[in-house]
Image (tube, rainbow, N blue to C red):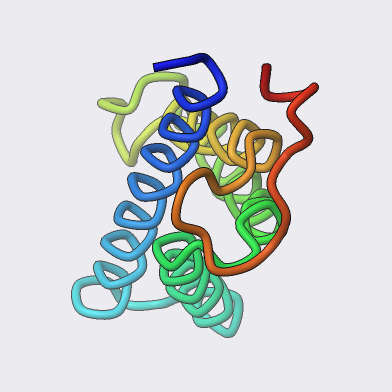
Length: 126
């Protein structure tokens, strides 16, 4: 498998993983947690719609960039809890990792099987 094809499949794997995680995360908020105010509802809606869009491969670069400020907000909400995910009330390392993966996804594009958007120029992927 050449490097361009590997990059396409890597982008697809990342896109599907992020999509599944965002769906699970948003559904957990809907069915398990109590949402705190209007921002909680907005965040849940954006995460749910973003997870579906990522799974379907719709405008992947833009969806990743739209989700990024929400993950940075989650990271800032957990800053006072400390670094580790196992910290009481969760640390900020996990949201920070999600933020990095969203940036990588926006740079790579959607990979194989996308429904919308343009692929990265070969010069950027190679």
